Image 1 (tube, rainbow, N blue to C red):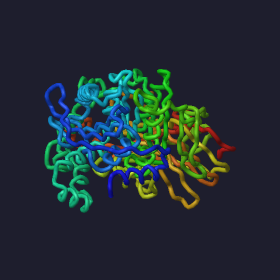
Image 2: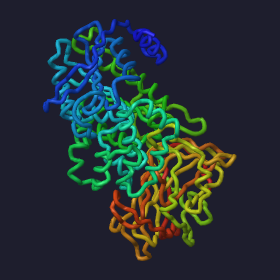
Image 3: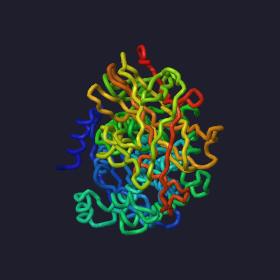
Length: 559
């Protein structure tokens, strides 16, 4: 099917505002030379108007597939679409080292664009996941040339997502390493591995020491995987030129952010949103019922992104269209999960809410009344048989998102606390956190907390969760040896229906989403000694363990 027809059909399917389509000329494999001589291979989708605005996409995932469609859609709507492979990928020279070269290579590419006869002086950028990191690396240096950004399931900093709760996001990091390596192997071998269910990756996720897991998954050593195992310290010099959070406030271009409640980068992306708001910017934020790889996310991102670029590149120099009045859409649009939730438009994120504690009580009860004197609950965590992770924010869409948790809740190493059936719906929108008071016979441990919605049939579906790694000196112990561990959970927007129950899980891990805590205190990459131990969760008046929910609507609560 001709590319022009595909682009026209895609625009209709996305319900994009109508524009007069223009002819598109495609030039592939253009050599763009970086300052160190490395050649960055680049495709150019040119509209009929030589001096139209430009949209830049820099990617490590190749320039084919969906990006070809996006290139044609942009060009058909009167934009120069420039799609470039990051160094070491997609035919570009050099070696791919995540995040290291994106600022300099981005600046060099922008300078190349400025020398082109069709350059109009107006730049937009579009990017999903790593493509978004490449945007943040360049954005502050693009100055007034940057007129718009589209940042999809991404953030300016990957460090905190990699080490969420100071643990290690093993599933995400190792799966991504395997994905990047798979781009270098013959297609037939890759398809065979996928058909077999990726047994090498599954074995690697269970392998110890972690320093050998990349070879198990791919057959080769992955340099950045080894580096991320070693450079765990948030203050390590290693991260200085790989994190761009301190540059976000300098970006003056309008930004639209699209993400999902079960996305791996959601907390970090919302931090970027908060930084822009504090700097006086007015970004648009869209959060849907999506995971990192959801097809629905891709469709929404295309529609939101193309409309955003239409709006903010219109009226630019030589664009040939009058300036727009603005879309009139709310700054925040989010999907509320659960019963009768649906889409909501809000003036800002987060909305006003009442931060309400739901206390853990003996007998597995969860209620809003204060705790009473009680004995602690106990469980034994064994890293040789680690508590498994189910669903939630994962890189691979088919394993991510909401799932039935009853299987894992039946394990003896998972404590559950469940409310009485709700007499009225309870709606929660915003940041969720837990404060869990624990005693442990080991000094090294993880505290994992998950919030679930239990329906009338007993099905327990995860809403949000979080994990924190405990080490000596990180949390102060009281006279009884108990630690008060604060656990940030993923933010959420969820409506718990009347008749449903809230449930809180407390466990010692969620492997392989987070690397198991060996209990020995050995370094992340070389640990092989696995120590099991007992944990106590306290919930008496001196140790009021609770989940704190930002409630925006509730009728009388169960007590």
